[in-house]
Every structure is written in C-alpha cells, then in structure tokens.
Image (cartoon, rainbow, N blue to C red; front, side, top):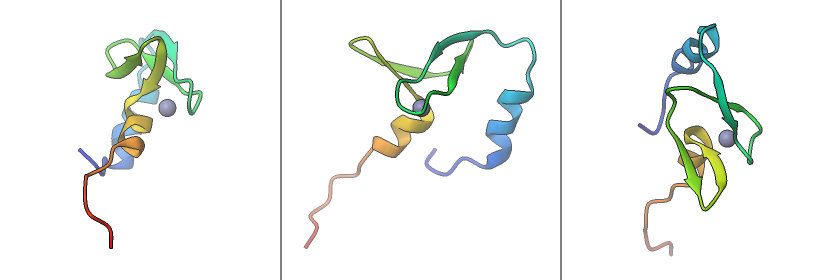
Length: 61
Ligand SMILES: [Zn+2]
C-alpha cells in the first residue's frame, strides 16, 4: 500500500455523500467518514501522511 495510484484519491473527493469527520493536523486535509486515519493520543493523522512517516528499518551505511 505504499504507492497508491492518484485515481484512488480522486475517487474519495468525488464522493459527495462523505461527511467530514476530522482534519489531519499535518497536511490539513479532511478525513471523511469511512476513511482510515490515525488518532495518536489526540493527534489526527491521515493515512496519506502516515505512509510518509512510515519507515522500514534498515542499516544505512
Ligand atoms: Zn495528512
């Protein structure tokens, strides 16, 4: 799930019935009803931002 195609995001914006549930504190994008997001001790982060923060542990030398 690292490289979601753009069409995946567009689909969400096109849905007129989706209710805004919260706002990502990082990018400021709305989080719509039914979307997956992260609530880290009250900090709301959308899955898009979370993917950017996700790291694979590797030795870097
Ligand atoms: Zn975000």
